[in-house]
Image (cartoon, rainbow, N blue to C red; front, side, top):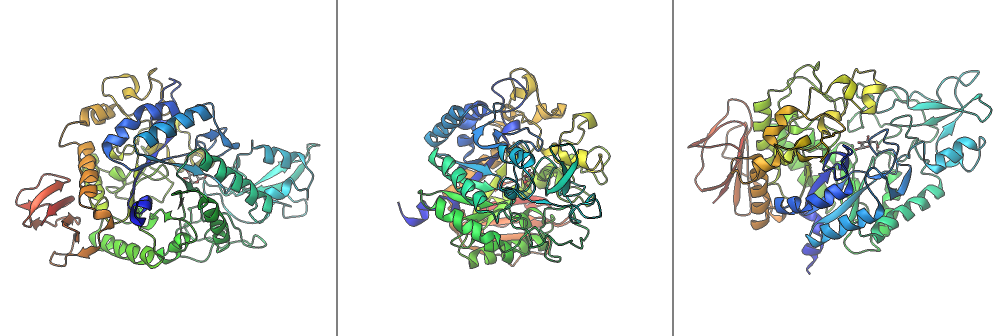
Length: 546
Ligand code: GLC
């Protein structure tokens, strides 16, 4: 094997499975590991190289599993460790690598460590694994500082002493059931080395590292003058936040890299919402992680000039540290791109959309743009992430009844923000089956829109005009033409409003801006996100040979 083959992650297409919503074998309405194993053949047929699974660990599910009570066991909702082993074995048989999520910023409040911390006195070793502080004000009834939770409301909750009196406060950048660890404590570092090795020993090919920009907090936990993005995941270029993007995290990633490097071929991928990209690139220096999610790309508007800029900057900044760029349009935290790209009002990350939101998208325009955007993304050199359901062209589920919503964001903002449920609705596999084939019982933990009968995988399979076929062809051609390792060269003979480039033998034309169109260039049309005649209309991407 040569070095390039070895570094499979440089070109990989990685498919994100959100286990709750992928496939339910048990019939309880929540997806599970056996369901995933049963459907792996479909993913191999799609042509992806790897899967990444959002958390399936023991958890009270207050944040859909990102609140972990035991980092080295499977929650009974999702199955058992044996089910995990069987899933990995089947994936490896099919040539698919398996990346698992790791959540180091916080645990669930039900984790044994946090329970011990609550039971232990102030200043104890048990409390020192988390961030407990005295409150402000005479009776300590004010939070220790002014930080906000990403999900809304304060980032502190007051604990109760064993005798029932009000106690110290603990920090939680997310839900109050997700206390933050203190990463300056060597015990925390050692525990996570153990967690990494546990999954590596079981055959995991790597980790997607949750909130990889948040582990280190500024000394003294100073107040922060928030800007308008106060509750966001970071990723703005304003003043340095005291909890997102601090340089101290890099020592942790160097340590983790040395653990992962004890094994062959395993990777670390950062969920780090930091800007500018020159800063994000620090997460993927050669002795840190292998990849970082390119959220700058995800957040770019559907505008040709902006897309060209972010593509250039990504290739330059990641290239400067010897890392491949990644490309991503959707995940379980953002409005699905087949809806997002047609929104007509601002919608900050994590706020979500629902029936009362402003600027709701036109469904047909959204799907058309979604297909064009995916066809553009999959031609770019580097590694790409696909979020389950985007290969079916799924839109965001907007009409979820208020009483069915489950995202902590919805509760912590008293319904002011819908949150992320709309991108987490269980997948439609079979048009004419209970729960569209998601669950044999017909149960689903979030309701599926009736219109999804038309988007079910069985109807799309074998239909050359379907979104599923578009993805299958794109992945096949990407592999055949080696575009992921090619050098991108801009084609400058196109009008504003068009993104055009060559990658190896392919020429790619994405006609983006409204009202723009171009004559179909010469060459053989290999792939097209929408029908083309002798012109390529707006919201269309075409791959040509020649
Ligand atoms: C990450 C996850 C998100 C979760 C949060 C807290 O952003 O992607 O789903 O809510 O971390 O763990």
